[in-house]
Length: 395
Image 1 (tube, rainbow, N blue to C red):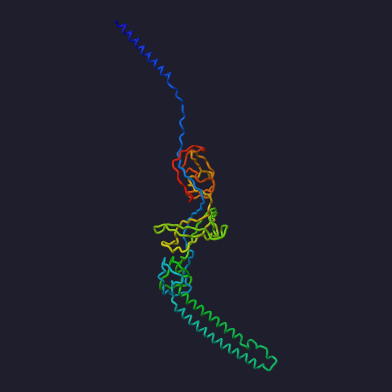
Image 2 (cartoon, one colour):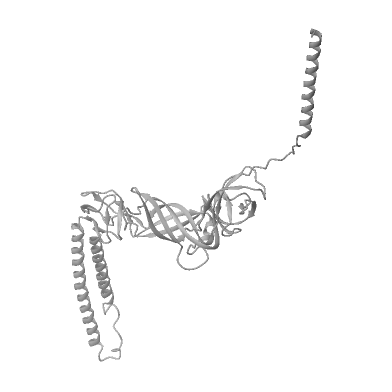
């Protein structure tokens, strides 16, 4: 076979193969199923929710203040003299009981003054008796002189009866007795006693020192009770009773006083007793006074100057719900999620806000789930996926 024929055969075979390939491609393309366009499902954001419980909820109002003594006085002598005795309790921080002698001033001068006053009283008593006898004798002479005359029933004139002399003698005796009482009082004042159970806040005296009236020797404060003055906004006073300030009778609201002192957490019970007379003109706050009985009965004590936190037991809200403050949205709304994952907006009634939570008096029911996490874009009715459910109690 010639070379030309072989070329022709190769060309024909090649064309046949290409034709068969093209035919097979067309057959495959014609039998290929048509693909339908599908829209991918929208992603569901993941949220954290809490399950609400409703029930009676006591509103707790918190505040802060500094402990102050209920009574604090300056120890000042009423007589002058040299200090001859100082009680061991008369030191900064020293404790004492009512009636204890803290200081004694040299009493010798005052004892002498009592003796002299007693002598003057005795002398005045003697002179009064003499004046009374003289007056009686003068009146008797008057009656003897006029007994047979028509004027026998007339009383003698005051000068004849020595009435001015009697009055002067009585006045002198009264004055000397008053001097004696004053001398005894000054003698008693040489011993300075405590008027209550308490402690020494500061002292500025030593034995041998000469003191005079109005000189400040020490500062004493009572340990029978302590008071804490806590400022509150006027709206907070709606939730608890302040005697003499808010409507209602009876004792003030109960209070728990807490602080960390001497390396441990301590707690005391107190009660609201009153509000101070004026509002603070700068802050418009009301200063509420809380009283704690026997602050030094515990160890460590509720010492004066401590900074404390108070929790006032306020009114009780029926069917209240407590949610984290982070779950509260703008315009007093929350995001509620049902069992199917549908999110909806819910208007609620806020009774009181605290730093970490919100107390609601309406709008939510037990068992409902409220979103506590944040979302960038939220629409009413959107679908979400629940990641975690927290149980929330009503306390």
